[in-house]
Length: 322
Ligand code: PMV
Image (tube, rainbow, N blue to C red; front, side, top):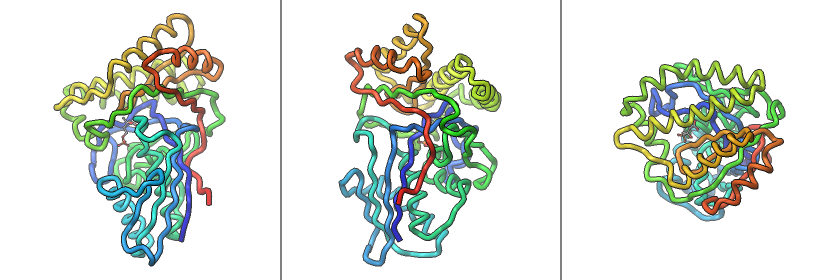
């Protein structure tokens, strides 16, 4: 009763910020993302009579408290589906450095969902896995299918899941993660979603989301990189405007984030097509075409505020590896 799965993190071009149902993690809008080849989690789950409680090892260290509890609660959902009560040992490793400020909940809950359900003897479809991963952490549902992914908002748990729009080799674009900060956030995304509604800009944001999804899907379908980049960058700023104007306000940027934004705009002015997007943290994702990646990476790495960068191309979704 043991299985191991590997899941990629994903970067959203159209973001998920705000929920209509807290417990089920139903989003206030559809979102669109790409799986990241070089930011992933490998998780093993073993159920057995020898375990008196669930035990969780993260990057080689036994963990207790909040994170371990959330993992245990997710295993409870799997146990319920499999009609069994065995406790489990969970071993989970991220390939990116701990405390790099790179979110691991999407890759983490996608890997846990696939490894856990297989170890429990369940045979779930991709759609069912995506729904189950979503309940663990919203954005995790997008790490299950391959390549370029849409998470349909839906209006119930059964209708809110992610599916692949295009496979990983559809478009040779890059996501260069620029790591500038690692301090753990005061308000994580789980709590942050609940504050979205307190922003006076939230209603305006939600009103435009369906149209934005239509437009970015059109740009993706036509491989129109300029249109695609313009939409995703404006979308990131839009989400952060809601974060900054919520009550209490959430400011995930630091001075280095702004320095990188200015460098991106300078590069664009000089004719290099690169756009940025930012999640709930100070690090920035730069989206570019494969041909421009080396130039952009070399330029950015020279900035003193850049700790390191991670180059990603689109990749497949979550896979069982043993
Ligand atoms: O899945 P969560 O609860 O960690 O929320 C993800 C929120 C953002 O990363 C800011 C946006 C997104 O769609 O990934």
